[in-house]
Image (tube, rainbow, N blue to C red; front, side):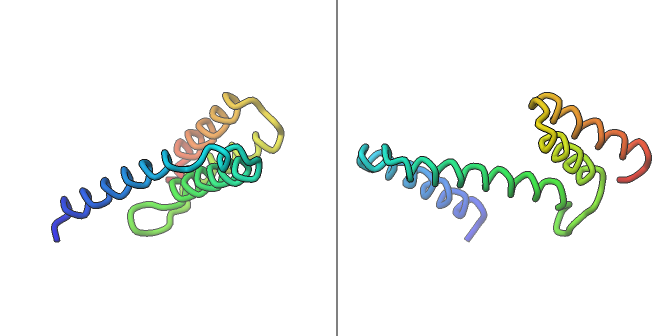
Length: 103
C-alpha cells in the first residue's frame, strides 16, 4: 500500500471518531468524572508532546539547547510565573545555550 492510502485511512478514522462523539449522550458528558478525565488526558498529551519535541532529533535522542529551554520553562512554572514569562524564560535559555555552542 502506498503512503496516500494510509493517509486516507487515517483521515477517515479520525473523522469517524469525531463523528462518534456526536452520538454520546449529553448526560454522560455532564458527569464531573468525565470532565476530570478529559482534562487530565489533555494535560498528559500536551506534556508528552512537549517532552518528545524537546529530546528527539530525527530517529534518535538529543540533548541540546531545547532541553535547557524546557528546564528553564519548568523552573519558571514551579515559581508560578505568568505564561508569557515562562515562554520567554524557555526561549531565552535556549537562545543563550545555542549562543554558547550547546547545539
